Figure 1 (cartoon, protein in one colour):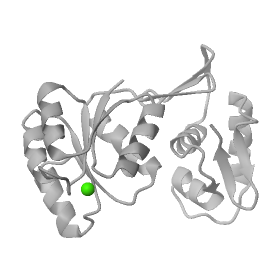
Figure 2 (cartoon, rainbow, N blue to C red; figure 1 turned 90 degrees about the horizontal axis):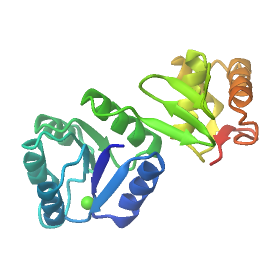
Figure 3 (cartoon, rainbow, N blue to C red; figure 1 turned 45 degrees about the horizontal axis):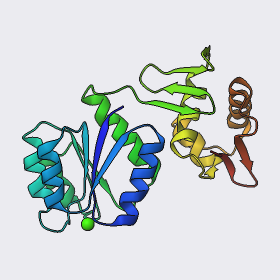
Figure 4 (tube, rainbow, N blue to C red; figure 1 turned 120 degrees about the horizontal axis):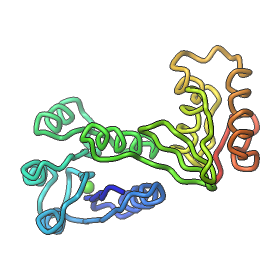
Length: 217
Ligand code: CA
């Protein structure tokens, strides 16, 4: 699995990213200041660097030049959220730009996208004996392939990327069907039923009263 360097001086954020990406199979490494990050980058090869901008010792802009020189993809993860900041970051050569605070599901999706564009990985999620390959869009349970429709697969990914989070029906619908939620829940509900049945996840995909659904891991 890809090696990800997390350069972040706020321990809580670093830990949040570390725990979530590790759970998805990435090999994660942490640097809490710019100097340590530079040393680690010099001595090792990473597939991706998640880079804060405001850092002790050497800031993210300076580090970026150093990292790009080695052709490693970089995502800025920063509180600097103005349009000027974003344009500056992207112009300097960052592959993507994510503003804090962020949803962990969005970070995961952006990590996958950048790695995919760099041709580095097939992201594979592994949960309850089920393996979900994002690139080939295949699902295997206990060695047996499982046939999912396009929407079932997208819905499954959305649940996995936001695992343990209660997701509103509206949000899930709009994300997966890519159209405004009409208030009609039957389509979404029936897709959830089918997913539960096909994966044997009746106990894992929880119904959250008055809200929607949660994948409990
Ligand atoms: Ca910082």
